[in-house]
Length: 243
Image 1: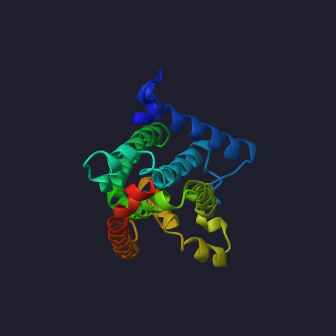
Image 2: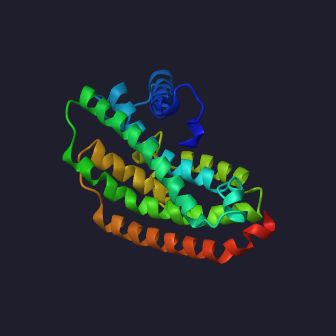
Image 3: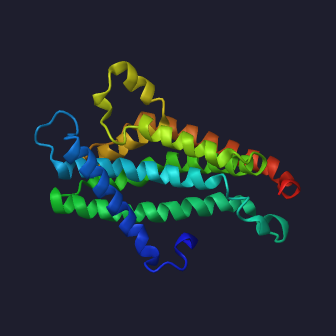
Protein backbone atom coordinates (compact mmCIF):
# COMPACT_ATOMS: atom_id res chain seq x y z
CA UNK A 1 0.00 0.00 0.00
CA UNK A 2 3.07 2.22 -0.19
CA UNK A 3 1.77 3.90 -3.33
CA UNK A 4 -0.73 5.87 -1.21
CA UNK A 5 1.78 6.91 1.44
CA UNK A 6 1.58 10.63 2.10
CA UNK A 7 -1.53 11.16 -0.04
CA UNK A 8 -4.50 13.01 1.43
CA UNK A 9 -7.11 10.31 0.70
CA UNK A 10 -4.79 7.36 1.37
CA UNK A 11 -6.41 3.96 0.88
CA UNK A 12 -9.65 5.66 -0.17
CA UNK A 13 -8.09 5.84 -3.62
CA UNK A 14 -8.58 2.05 -3.78
CA UNK A 15 -12.31 2.75 -3.71
CA UNK A 16 -12.51 5.96 -5.75
CA UNK A 17 -10.31 4.81 -8.62
CA UNK A 18 -12.41 1.79 -9.74
CA UNK A 19 -15.66 3.74 -9.31
CA UNK A 20 -14.33 6.61 -11.40
CA UNK A 21 -13.02 4.36 -14.16
CA UNK A 22 -16.25 2.33 -14.18
CA UNK A 23 -18.26 5.53 -14.58
CA UNK A 24 -16.08 6.77 -17.44
CA UNK A 25 -16.05 3.45 -19.32
CA UNK A 26 -19.80 3.00 -18.89
CA UNK A 27 -20.54 6.53 -20.10
CA UNK A 28 -18.30 6.21 -23.15
CA UNK A 29 -19.44 2.77 -24.27
CA UNK A 30 -23.10 2.66 -23.25
CA UNK A 31 -24.08 6.33 -23.58
CA UNK A 32 -21.89 7.74 -26.35
CA UNK A 33 -21.46 4.57 -28.44
CA UNK A 34 -24.91 3.20 -27.43
CA UNK A 35 -23.38 -0.22 -26.73
CA UNK A 36 -25.47 -3.04 -25.30
CA UNK A 37 -24.17 -6.32 -23.94
CA UNK A 38 -25.22 -9.00 -26.37
CA UNK A 39 -28.48 -8.84 -28.31
CA UNK A 40 -30.90 -8.47 -25.39
CA UNK A 41 -33.01 -5.29 -25.75
CA UNK A 42 -33.65 -5.33 -21.99
CA UNK A 43 -29.99 -4.82 -21.12
CA UNK A 44 -29.61 -1.27 -19.85
CA UNK A 45 -26.78 0.92 -18.68
CA UNK A 46 -26.71 -0.76 -15.25
CA UNK A 47 -26.37 -4.23 -16.80
CA UNK A 48 -23.59 -2.99 -19.07
CA UNK A 49 -21.78 -1.42 -16.11
CA UNK A 50 -21.98 -4.58 -13.99
CA UNK A 51 -20.81 -6.90 -16.77
CA UNK A 52 -18.04 -4.51 -17.81
CA UNK A 53 -16.85 -3.99 -14.24
CA UNK A 54 -16.65 -7.75 -13.63
CA UNK A 55 -14.28 -8.12 -16.59
CA UNK A 56 -12.27 -5.09 -15.55
CA UNK A 57 -11.67 -6.47 -12.06
CA UNK A 58 -10.20 -9.68 -13.46
CA UNK A 59 -8.11 -7.88 -16.06
CA UNK A 60 -6.87 -5.19 -13.64
CA UNK A 61 -5.73 -7.88 -11.18
CA UNK A 62 -3.57 -9.32 -13.94
CA UNK A 63 -2.41 -5.97 -15.34
CA UNK A 64 -1.46 -4.46 -11.98
CA UNK A 65 0.73 -7.41 -11.03
CA UNK A 66 2.36 -7.88 -14.42
CA UNK A 67 3.09 -4.18 -15.01
CA UNK A 68 4.71 -3.79 -11.58
CA UNK A 69 6.60 -7.10 -11.66
CA UNK A 70 9.28 -5.93 -14.11
CA UNK A 71 10.63 -3.37 -11.62
CA UNK A 72 10.15 -5.32 -8.38
CA UNK A 73 13.86 -6.09 -8.01
CA UNK A 74 15.33 -2.90 -9.47
CA UNK A 75 13.14 -0.76 -7.20
CA UNK A 76 14.16 -2.73 -4.09
CA UNK A 77 17.93 -2.77 -4.51
CA UNK A 78 18.57 -2.71 -0.74
CA UNK A 79 16.87 -6.06 -0.37
CA UNK A 80 19.26 -7.54 -2.93
CA UNK A 81 22.56 -6.02 -1.82
CA UNK A 82 22.43 -5.12 1.86
CA UNK A 83 19.84 -7.28 3.57
CA UNK A 84 19.49 -11.02 3.93
CA UNK A 85 15.99 -11.06 2.54
CA UNK A 86 14.03 -13.71 0.60
CA UNK A 87 13.43 -11.55 -2.48
CA UNK A 88 11.32 -14.26 -4.07
CA UNK A 89 8.43 -13.12 -1.85
CA UNK A 90 8.27 -9.72 -3.57
CA UNK A 91 5.97 -11.00 -6.35
CA UNK A 92 3.78 -12.58 -3.66
CA UNK A 93 3.52 -9.26 -1.82
CA UNK A 94 2.75 -7.59 -5.14
CA UNK A 95 -0.05 -10.08 -5.80
CA UNK A 96 -1.50 -9.63 -2.31
CA UNK A 97 -1.60 -5.86 -2.80
CA UNK A 98 -3.41 -6.31 -6.13
CA UNK A 99 -5.85 -8.74 -4.48
CA UNK A 100 -6.62 -6.10 -1.85
CA UNK A 101 -7.55 -3.60 -4.57
CA UNK A 102 -9.56 -6.26 -6.40
CA UNK A 103 -11.44 -7.04 -3.17
CA UNK A 104 -12.42 -3.38 -2.78
CA UNK A 105 -13.64 -3.37 -6.38
CA UNK A 106 -15.63 -6.57 -5.75
CA UNK A 107 -17.39 -4.96 -2.80
CA UNK A 108 -18.39 -2.07 -5.06
CA UNK A 109 -19.55 -4.56 -7.70
CA UNK A 110 -21.67 -6.58 -5.26
CA UNK A 111 -23.30 -3.42 -3.91
CA UNK A 112 -24.10 -2.33 -7.47
CA UNK A 113 -25.65 -5.75 -8.23
CA UNK A 114 -27.81 -5.59 -5.10
CA UNK A 115 -28.94 -2.03 -5.87
CA UNK A 116 -29.77 -2.56 -9.54
CA UNK A 117 -30.54 -6.30 -9.78
CA UNK A 118 -31.82 -6.83 -6.21
CA UNK A 119 -30.19 -10.25 -5.88
CA UNK A 120 -26.78 -11.82 -5.66
CA UNK A 121 -26.39 -15.31 -7.08
CA UNK A 122 -24.94 -17.93 -4.73
CA UNK A 123 -22.50 -18.83 -7.50
CA UNK A 124 -20.43 -15.75 -6.61
CA UNK A 125 -18.94 -17.99 -3.92
CA UNK A 126 -17.17 -19.82 -6.76
CA UNK A 127 -15.32 -16.67 -7.86
CA UNK A 128 -12.24 -17.37 -5.65
CA UNK A 129 -12.01 -20.86 -7.17
CA UNK A 130 -12.06 -19.40 -10.69
CA UNK A 131 -9.30 -16.93 -9.88
CA UNK A 132 -6.88 -19.53 -8.44
CA UNK A 133 -5.48 -20.54 -11.87
CA UNK A 134 -5.10 -16.85 -12.72
CA UNK A 135 -3.23 -16.13 -9.49
CA UNK A 136 -0.90 -19.08 -10.06
CA UNK A 137 -0.13 -17.85 -13.58
CA UNK A 138 0.39 -14.30 -12.32
CA UNK A 139 2.87 -15.50 -9.71
CA UNK A 140 4.84 -17.54 -12.23
CA UNK A 141 4.94 -14.73 -14.78
CA UNK A 142 5.84 -12.21 -12.07
CA UNK A 143 8.88 -14.26 -11.01
CA UNK A 144 10.01 -14.51 -14.62
CA UNK A 145 9.45 -10.83 -15.42
CA UNK A 146 10.98 -9.64 -12.14
CA UNK A 147 14.12 -11.54 -13.02
CA UNK A 148 14.20 -10.42 -16.65
CA UNK A 149 13.63 -6.83 -15.54
CA UNK A 150 17.04 -6.89 -13.85
CA UNK A 151 18.92 -7.95 -16.97
CA UNK A 152 16.77 -6.32 -19.69
CA UNK A 153 15.92 -2.75 -18.73
CA UNK A 154 13.45 -2.35 -21.62
CA UNK A 155 11.10 -4.88 -20.03
CA UNK A 156 8.78 -2.37 -18.28
CA UNK A 157 8.01 -0.54 -21.54
CA UNK A 158 7.64 -3.79 -23.49
CA UNK A 159 5.32 -5.42 -20.98
CA UNK A 160 3.21 -2.25 -20.69
CA UNK A 161 2.55 -2.38 -24.44
CA UNK A 162 1.77 -6.11 -24.35
CA UNK A 163 -0.67 -5.69 -21.44
CA UNK A 164 -2.47 -2.88 -23.30
CA UNK A 165 -2.81 -5.10 -26.38
CA UNK A 166 -4.11 -7.94 -24.20
CA UNK A 167 -6.80 -5.64 -22.81
CA UNK A 168 -8.31 -5.26 -26.28
CA UNK A 169 -7.74 -8.91 -27.19
CA UNK A 170 -9.71 -9.94 -24.11
CA UNK A 171 -13.52 -9.68 -23.91
CA UNK A 172 -13.41 -6.82 -21.41
CA UNK A 173 -15.41 -4.21 -23.35
CA UNK A 174 -17.37 -6.55 -25.59
CA UNK A 175 -19.09 -9.95 -25.35
CA UNK A 176 -17.26 -12.87 -26.90
CA UNK A 177 -20.40 -13.64 -28.92
CA UNK A 178 -20.00 -10.32 -30.78
CA UNK A 179 -16.99 -11.75 -32.62
CA UNK A 180 -17.13 -14.08 -35.65
CA UNK A 181 -16.73 -17.73 -34.64
CA UNK A 182 -13.21 -17.90 -36.09
CA UNK A 183 -12.06 -14.94 -34.00
CA UNK A 184 -13.81 -16.31 -30.90
CA UNK A 185 -11.55 -19.37 -31.05
CA UNK A 186 -8.48 -17.16 -31.45
CA UNK A 187 -9.44 -14.87 -28.55
CA UNK A 188 -10.14 -17.86 -26.28
CA UNK A 189 -6.50 -18.89 -26.70
CA UNK A 190 -5.84 -15.96 -24.39
CA UNK A 191 -6.21 -17.42 -20.85
CA UNK A 192 -7.53 -14.08 -19.61
CA UNK A 193 -10.53 -14.41 -21.93
CA UNK A 194 -11.58 -17.66 -20.25
CA UNK A 195 -11.18 -16.19 -16.75
CA UNK A 196 -13.21 -13.09 -17.63
CA UNK A 197 -16.00 -15.10 -19.24
CA UNK A 198 -16.18 -17.54 -16.31
CA UNK A 199 -16.20 -14.71 -13.77
CA UNK A 200 -19.15 -13.08 -15.51
CA UNK A 201 -20.89 -16.44 -15.69
CA UNK A 202 -20.85 -16.96 -11.91
CA UNK A 203 -21.31 -13.30 -10.87
CA UNK A 204 -23.88 -11.94 -13.32
CA UNK A 205 -25.68 -14.90 -14.86
CA UNK A 206 -25.54 -17.23 -11.87
CA UNK A 207 -24.22 -20.23 -13.84
CA UNK A 208 -21.59 -22.73 -12.80
CA UNK A 209 -18.18 -22.51 -14.47
CA UNK A 210 -16.85 -24.91 -17.06
CA UNK A 211 -15.21 -27.32 -14.62
CA UNK A 212 -13.24 -29.20 -17.29
CA UNK A 213 -11.64 -26.04 -18.70
CA UNK A 214 -11.10 -24.76 -15.17
CA UNK A 215 -9.17 -27.93 -14.27
CA UNK A 216 -7.04 -27.54 -17.43
CA UNK A 217 -6.32 -23.92 -16.56
CA UNK A 218 -5.43 -24.97 -13.02
CA UNK A 219 -2.79 -27.39 -14.34
CA UNK A 220 -1.44 -24.73 -16.70
CA UNK A 221 -1.30 -22.25 -13.81
CA UNK A 222 0.62 -24.72 -11.65
CA UNK A 223 3.14 -25.35 -14.44
CA UNK A 224 3.67 -21.62 -15.05
CA UNK A 225 4.00 -20.94 -11.32
CA UNK A 226 6.55 -23.73 -10.80
CA UNK A 227 8.51 -22.77 -13.93
CA UNK A 228 8.57 -19.11 -12.89
CA UNK A 229 9.80 -19.90 -9.40
CA UNK A 230 12.57 -22.18 -10.69
CA UNK A 231 13.63 -19.56 -13.25
CA UNK A 232 13.80 -16.89 -10.53
CA UNK A 233 15.84 -19.12 -8.23
CA UNK A 234 18.29 -19.89 -11.04
CA UNK A 235 18.82 -16.27 -12.03
CA UNK A 236 18.68 -14.40 -8.71
CA UNK A 237 22.35 -15.17 -7.97
CA UNK A 238 23.33 -12.70 -10.67
CA UNK A 239 21.11 -9.83 -9.47
CA UNK A 240 23.72 -8.22 -7.22
CA UNK A 241 26.32 -8.17 -10.00
CA UNK A 242 24.02 -6.47 -12.49
CA UNK A 243 22.38 -4.01 -10.09
